[in-house]
Length: 139
Image (cartoon, rainbow, N blue to C red; front, side, top):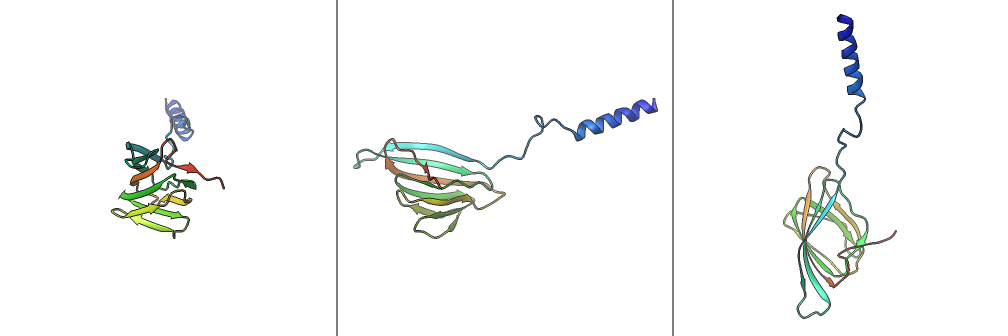
């Protein structure tokens, strides 16, 4: 009986130490979520649309270099946003602050300034109809 108990405990310890990776949850990867709240033809500017979006960056998330097809106006709803757009210095914006990005400028840095807290932005952009809100820039 004693030997059986020792064997069962040894087996249980070995099984626990070698968990199946498919059943263990890995640390979540930083992510980005974009939600389009509204898209509307822009009065007085044929072929253009205005869009209102929320953009959420998980802790530690950093987007690759990209451009926007039109004027972009941003407002930080939660967290802190570090950004660098050609012609502008590297800047960190906090909750309640606003920022602007000119059309076509290369957005070289776009990251959540925090490794532990989420970031949420409210974005208003006016661009050409049919073009994506952001396009990657190849290095």
